[in-house]
Length: 455
Image 1 (cartoon, rainbow, N blue to C red):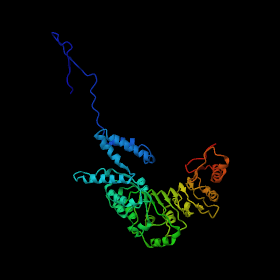
Image 2 (tube, one colour):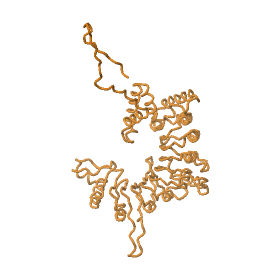
Image 3 (cartoon, rainbow, N blue to C red):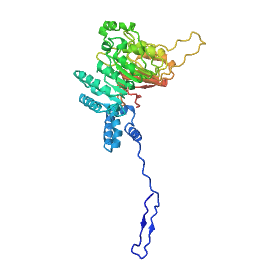
Image 4 (cartoon, helix red, strand yellow):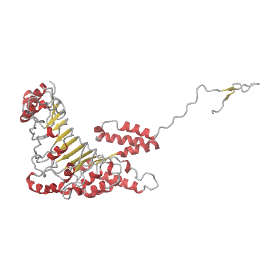
């Protein structure tokens, strides 16, 4: 109960009166402090309000670092909430920063006692995303051993790591792969990107002994996988045929269990024990596949066409792409893509453009029912081709949902160029394709997903 307050308006009078002071408004109760979980949600909404693409950009990452550092200076409560957010996404840009980060986590792990209820030390257990793409892309090959040694020590300290991004060209050692595979929390991995795979090293053993196959066996919740191989040396095909001959007689003892894998990228990889294991494993949720075609290479030296045929039934998007190198050797693509993948929404083809076969066999009798239409909506091509236009005209009656054709290697000339430049070469073919497709209600876009500029 509140304290009684008396007022003495005439304290020197013979009979001074006393007045009781009554509050006009009730006392406002103090506000209850917000729980740390609510503050954490507020900070996440404020710091990561952009979309995924912007959040992964360099500028946005720096803004998050500055904001978390500022919040840590407000009070101890904000510091305890902002520190996990600060370490949740780690992006390292130099070998020195990787050394300091590994040393800091090791020092914190040594000071972690067994009295605490959580067995994993901080800040290692806060790290969920580790991005080393910029570090490894600018790394000298002489420092690969040092980086592999640091990663071998670092991976066991990250039990809740969900996303790991490396760089194509950096080869993980077997010790680093074993450290990533046999650590606590290996099943928490959701995304693996930029993985460089050399079949001459990893596929030299049996399929079940491949270190990447062993890693995928424990990553049961994996949703996105991106692997880049070393390609195919067309000048030494005989040795490649000899090295892959053993895949015919190497059965998979236990198929991989990847029930949540939705996006798979296998570039510059004609054949390998990793690809062989994925080929013979059920992938029920696979919807997006990026692949380098090798249809002119026979089995088992090439598994790409068989891979498309095996897992193409439920695919929604197929991106056929050959990474650019010097010299770039293009291989043919299968012509049965629309038959083996009847549920495609987006199809991206590679040079040389295949003469795609009609997705359904024509009926033998006139009374037979017409085949169901294909749901393809977007078709991406490297550049316009008069030969492929003949194929496209045959396929258009079977593609009633087709709305966009994109030329990914071509850009529209800006408005203001003279008419001769707009009619010459590829620009002239683009203009002719645009005129023909407009009649059919199909938009022609360039590599930037832009339409022809209006005059």
